[in-house]
Length: 95
Image 1 (cartoon, one colour):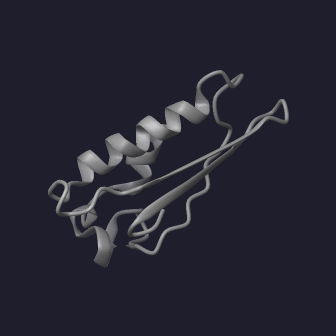
Image 2: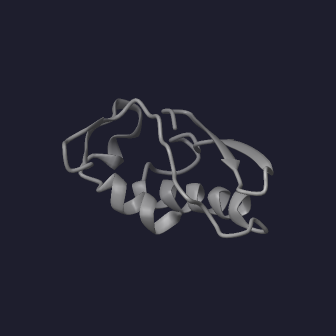
Image 3: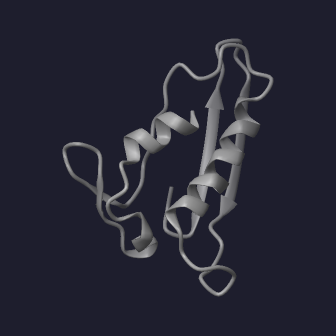
């Protein structure tokens, strides 16, 4: 996950590999909102998960945000609305 776009890859137990990506909406298109961003992310994750046996066994995330030891976003200059977000909890709800 980056400040302007997201790339997703799912490797399923049956060997199927699916990839997707999208750009975050620009501020001019809609106000920044972690909830709206997470909804968009969830829609893309569901598309990768649909039709795959057993869902996901694990999830890896790379992003430029700073997290505290509990997994809460403390800084992300390009997605400031995410500050204070429990990222681990949010991702568990999505996956």
